Image (tube, rainbow, N blue to C red; front, side):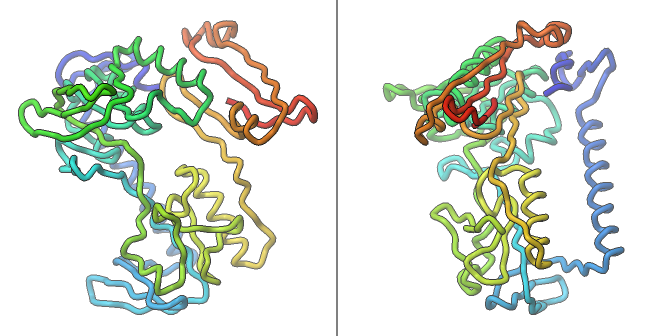
Length: 352
């Protein structure tokens, strides 16, 4: 979002970033090069530390063995401890399946061959708003379709209001209380949306970005054979030491549910490794989170409403960015900081 703040659409694939011409496919190629360097670096670390890497699709046979379908045939592996870290993937609507070109997820959105003229984002959550903001700044005509009555309903209402104001400045069209029903491919394609009064709305779209949530990669793991329990959404249930319902089997990252954030996964991995090594460790569920929109949104702890629901005598304090000299020099005075505390104990409960 910080980079996109300096980007001006100059027609077609021509972009200007800080006065320099940029070609989007070259940016994608540059990104792929960095990813290759990072993954090869991890592979090197594994090799140097005596870690054997087996490529293939695995599923549990028992709570102490699994089978991996490799290119050379099935390989059975026995273990004392296992860590499940299979991640998650974008969720799709049954009536609007992914096709990788016209209907895409967040992965494809990071490497589009060109900036779409019209982009419709289904879902006004973190990922949809982040990518919608970026493409709006790159020159796309962006429409966000959200089923709920407001953006980011789980956060402080002031956050949603501040973000809504900025999105409107970027000329992003917001359709709240609307649900996406069907998709008709074409040039351009058409997305059928139903409004709060059951009215029919047809939206033209060069690309539809699906961001209605993510689902865990657990279906083919054979968790039942290992005795690993999941919740009603398929996420593996764990305790504060990352232990699953099966002794000796742990789960970390997106597949373990909660906040689907990389830094949370890193900390969960550290906790699991320390527990396996016999060290005292536990995961603290107070996870800082951020949404890379404009303005950016970051928070940790309880919201004001959550604190009230838990019975706290809540007091709050806030500071508007428009009174900040630093914000003025950056021409970024949209936004605020808000602290939530217990008025009796003076304990800080949350910050946004």
